[in-house]
Each structure stands twice: as structure tokens, then as C-alpha cells.
Amino acid sequence: MQYEIERAEMDDSSLDRHKVTIEALRRSDERFRSIFEFSCTGIAIETTEGQFAQANQAFCDMLGYTEVELLEMNWRDVSHPDDVVTSNNLDQKVASGEIDHFRYDKRYIRKTGEVIWVDFTASFIRDAEGQILYNVCQIYDITERKRGENSLREANINLEQRIEERSRELQRNEAMLASIVNNLPTEIAVKDTSGRYMLVNPQFASRFGVQNFEVLGKTIRELDFVSPEYAEKITEQDKLINETLEVIRDENEYVLPDGQSGRELVIKFPVFDVDGAITGIGTIATDITELKLAEDALFSAKEEAEIANRAKSEFLATMSHELRTPLNAIIGFSELLTREIFGPHGDPRYADYTTAINVSGNHLLEIINDILDISKIEAGEEEIIDTEINVAKAVSSCIAMLKTRSQEAGIRVEIDISENLPSLRADERLIKQVVINLLSNAVKFTCAGGNITVHACLDDNLCMKVMVTDTGVGIDAEDIPKVLLPFGQVAESVKREHGGTGLGLPICKSLMELHGGTLGIASEPGTGTTVTVRFPPDRTIQQ
Image: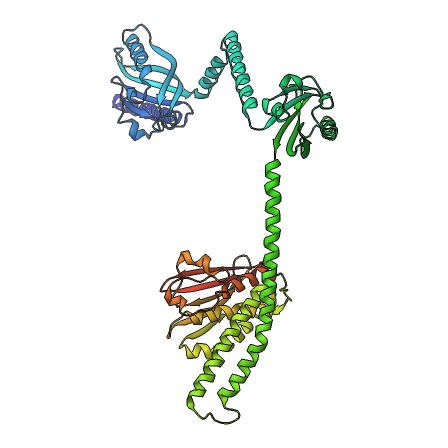
């Protein structure tokens, strides 16, 4: 009985030791897995056939594959082809027992195709009989080191070879520079710091009808084919270069040996040696005589055109005033006749005639007023008088002025402006003229039953915007620039049948520019048009 108890105790003790051993093995396995997974060194386990059996995160990161992807691959699939033979030879030496591990610099091809260098170490796990079970690979990235080694190797090129290459390069550069200097259409010269010519190109010498040797070694004052005034100015420019060491640009007037004069544009600059000390003065000269003559002719033509334009504007303004006086009388008397103030007409046709006279007179007055407005703007006589404007009230006033015309045309006009919209600093008379012109255009080109909406708001830059949108005939995109030109009209009959001078939109555009603003048009034929006037943010009066 005692023996059975002792035996039982021994069994319990063995069991406890077995549990301790198992626990120790478990902890060892956990430590191994922790080291394997979290090591900064890439670790992979390969089968004897070269198939990946396991890989840690560092290994996967270096090659750019996931572990799942690697487990489907052989080490040869990711190795550089030039290194496969080396690895196979080393594996054979391990198999023969000649070596039991090896280490060398190896190249892998990442998933992206990039080639990386690694310090590769291979060790082998064997069974009790010494047969290889697995190959444990350890790698760490040495790509940067390899690049450094390659750079150093490239930097250690034979010195004589480099000197020879440099010498050939200098010869090529010298020949190329000489070719450029000699063939450039500009004149090039280099002097020493005392002002003596060291280099001149053929263009420099040919301008004065001399040979290079007649210039080299001399100062500008020693050349008998240049005027004293020209020589003095060149000397002063050279002196300025020596003192300031800065590049200068200037125009010089010269006189040729045959007495003809010309002008040149010169760029003078200091020439430095490798230590930064000035060793000479460079000059690049371009003959601009013809250019100056053309410039003078263009300036004269521009002045003549401006004089003609001012005369045209003054003539239009004068004629507009002269025409408006009798026209106002025609309109006034025709209106009296239309209303039959002094009694009825004997013939009803007279009423039709006087009405036609009145309508035509008013239309002609509108045209004359437009011409007068554009003439004043072009002549720079239009001035703006800023006041604080309630945009909603100003727009409502404009709509009221055109109410009768819009109702007769069967067009609905709406206003969409918030009561909280800030005030605008502008010339109220001119702004109302802009809105009235835009509304008149919208009414003119919108068919009966159509709609016109006037909307005003602030954009993201606090710029006041006023938009007039209609459901009219619209404008082709290629015609939009045309309608913004004075007297510009599009050719389509549906638009031409309305007549007019084509000055409405140009006047609006000019008045907006006087305020520092812009006018833009968005339109689609058959759908309608939106004209947007935008004022600069400094004209918005913040509450």
C-alpha cells in the first residue's frame, strides 16, 4: 500500500515536471515568435526546394510582398538572375558538408521591380540524422551602402583619363564658344580693366569697316574711326562697371566713318576670374537704328490716330448736341399733334403720321444719346460721382421706368435682391444707366411670354454682382466679343431686325470699367442670356 502511494506521488511529480517543460517550451516558442515577428532584420524560412515557408514583417517590407504572396513563391522568383547561380553553388557546398552556412551581398527584385541590395546570411536547420530540413535566411537592406560604394568607385576614375576628357571638353567648349561669338548677329567685345580690347567678333569690327587687328590692344579713345563723343561715353560706361561691378544697359548714338549715324543698345557686364576678382569688361551691342526709326514712325502714327480719334469723338459729340436741339422740337410738336391738343385732325391718317414721327424721333434721340455717351467716355470726359446706393431701390426704379415697355411686349420682369444686401459706393446715375440698358436689351430680345430676372448678391470676394437674366433668343459664343464692341451687332436676322446702334453693351462695359468693375456675358442660343456686372470689393459698403 505504501509503495502504491509513493508511486502515485512520483507520477504526480513527473506530471508536474512535464507541465513545467511544456510551459517552458511554450514560452520559448512565444519568445522565438516575438523575435521572429518584430525583428528589424528580415527573416524567412525556406524549404529544401527553395519554397518560402514563413517570413516576418521586415522581410515582407523589404521585398514589398505580403507573407501570403511569398508563401506561393520560390526564392528564385525574387532573386536577381545574376545571383541565382551564386546561391545554387553555395547551397551545393552546404549539402556536401563543405560549409554549414554562408553570407554574401545579394540582390532581390522587389514587387515594384526595384532592385535592392541586402546582406544575406543563410543558416540551416537539420534533423537528428543531419539532414537539412529548412534554410533560415536573414537579410538587412544595404542598398544605400552599395550606392555609396558605386559612387565612390565611379569617383575613382583614372585621373589622367579624367584630365584628358576634361581637356577635350574644354577644346570643344572653346570651339563652340568661338563659333557662337563669331556668328551671333550681335556685336561682342571684351576689354581688360584698363579698357584695352582683348576680343572683338567680326560683327563689331565690320560695323566700322575695319579688321579685328586694328582694334585689339587699343582703347576706344585710340580708335580714329569713332567720334570723340562716342569714345567718351563708352569710357564712362567702362569706368562705371569697374566701380560698381554691376551690369548696365544703355543706348548709345554713334557716327560711322562715312558720316552716317545710328543707335545701339549695349549691355556691359564685369568679367570675373575663378577667385571672383574682375579681370575685364564684356560688351554686347545690338544695332537698333532701324528699330528706332520704326518706333518713331509707329509713335507718330499712334499720335496721328489718337488725334483723329479725338477729332472723331469731338465731332460726334458736337453733332449729337446739334442734332438733339431740332430733334427735341420735332418730338415735342409731334407729341402735341398726336394728343390733338389744339383740336382733332381732319383726316385720321394724320394721327398715324404724327405718331410715326414721334416714335421715330424718340428712336433717333436714343441713338444720338448713345453716340454722345460713347463719345464722352472715349474722350475721357465722363466722370463718376460716388454716392451710397441701395441696390434694390435703384434696380426697382429702373424696372419701373421700363414697366410700360415690358408689359406691352408681354414680358414678366422680376427682382430677386435680399433686403440685407449691403449698399454700394458708385455713381447712381451711371449705374442706373447700365441697368436700364441691360433691361432694354433683355426686353428687346425676349419674346412675348418670356421672363426677365434681376438678381444681386455678394460673391466670395465680397464683390457686388448684378445679373440680368432673360429667356430670349440668346447669342452664339463666337458673337459675344462682337456685341461688346462699339457699333458691333450680330448678323442673324432675328437679332438684326430689332435695329439699334449696337452701343448699349459697350456703354455698359465702359461705365463698369470706370468703376473698376467688369461686365460678362453667358448665353446660349434659344435658351437666353445672363449679363453680369461685377464691382470691385472696395465698393461694397460693409455694415
